Length: 449
Image (tube, rainbow, N blue to C red; front, side, top):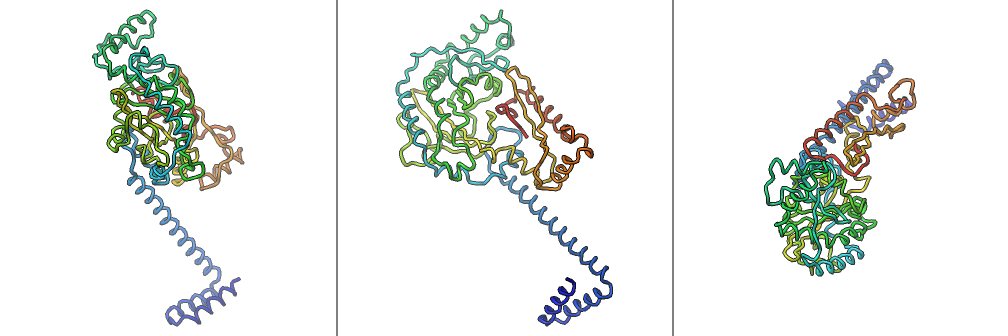
């Protein structure tokens, strides 16, 4: 092998006319013959140095691209505090997906359901159906009202109602004592009795509730194999109607009556018309009266909906894109919203795992179960055989197969660092709950990374 390399270099030297370069190579040949072990050890060190230098610059360039793509990320102006984390996650998502949605075609069944919704809107008459309010179930200190509708969840925070609340009023609303039930009913009637516009908003959302619930079972776009379907779920995770006055009725595809979930999910100070997609829907003229609720045949989504940028959903559905359409009906101004979540392979956990692996960081998958009573259970998910995509995972893989070396892995328990991550997560979640910011950390019971 050595003789072959020498002959190859000699042939190259014969073809090169540079005398100095020839002298260098001749010196190398002489050195190789006289000090063969030292020469090849030097070559090994030189190749190693070049490889490590190239690897260093390659990693530096990769980190630089991640940092710049995160800083340059164009995201929705949502009120979440951790916009840096959101930009970090979104930087791994393929860009211009919202532009692809604008050119997508409507599903035929979606248009048919819009026709049914139009009929319901035309038949709406305020005052025909009774509107009764009660305190929403869940951890909300009695500050969120809902109604008795069997479909969806009405979110009506007491702070958008006109009457001011004193300390005794707040105590009565928060009370779990049955002896205060009469006082609660009387106070709720007082708060909502003279607010005609709020009642009209509630009555309209209740009147079209069945149709809005049906939208959660219908794909919005007709794109089963295209780029949109590769990144987004075609069936909305949530459909909801937000009125100008702050009333929000929400419909989920996981339950027809999700009162216990949504009753604890949002802070009572949340004002949904302040969401970044509400007023742009009207400014872009993606709105109309009840006669224009049906999309025209052949029209793409972009001509009918305002389409948001990807963002972290306040309702706990992870990374979503929201489609919105403005509605005017009998004095009610509202926005109809459809949340399309990212598919599992493009979801927040997967995006985070890919980014963490890029930095050779430590990660721990945790299943978080949130019970109706407010109890939270954490269960670490320890993988016995992980993919070998970096040095850390290779080491973890070896430890999994050599249990006598690493006692923690053999007993299927998280490592000390992972246990610390779990403790930090618990402290983070508890602090959020104490501040009434459950929506920023909870989704539907499942896994979180």
